[in-house]
Image (cartoon, rainbow, N blue to C red; front, side, top):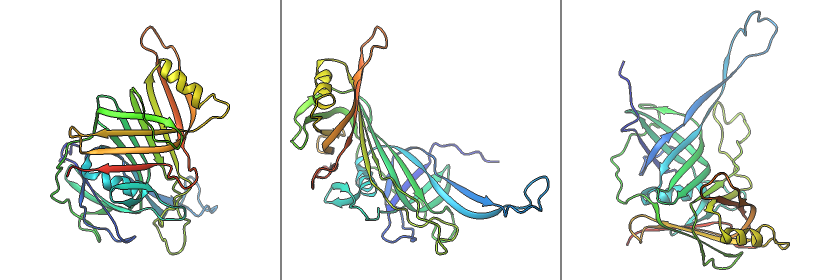
Length: 314
């Protein structure tokens, strides 16, 4: 028995143009772990003929879902934000309009040299973690349809792809805020920022046409949340008084920018109207007091609730 190890495993992806048609991967992901799995849902008739155990189990459905954890790089940032958010325009990504399908992708995984293809993958949610003096990490939660082994119909192979840029990091990251709807300009010296884009994806109902596999999932009302950790001082206390406890409860504009080691490889995440749901800090010991605040991006008028701009080196 030849045991396999995770070192050398490869994850590649490509956006599909057509549902149900796998495509050759063209994007290499900086994978640190994955949890994509296939579940066979079996049932029995429920008749009264069985005695000690069920008499049979029939295959009724196959479900493919899971996640991929990565260190975010410029090489796959465009694929990631377009497929997670749904709308792209020259490096600027926004949420897809209501009643609009999200892009689907083919994911190809080599687990210790054993290659599997996962077509029709929809990103259910994306979480960006940006801690100070560390790399920017992305957690991708997705749902697909089936698993195709090497040699199967529609199976893809691992391509000869490589990275051309360094990973994003938070050694010169900036988080600024301002009054809701304005251009944020006041800097906060935060410890970490976490932003989650949840597409509230619902499985399509099973029909005669879908057979064993799920049909294309449907995005619902999106939820964009932000959580920030910051050392406790008067700045966060004033922030709390203005945006959480004020009788008017105004929204706040937040903009997070991070880069690679090169200033011209940047990601800017702008949320013009964030309602703050929690803010504060508590003493947990003799050391530095940590504080935090969390909120949710709102749709106000025609303003996009979140806009991600990816800028590449010339």
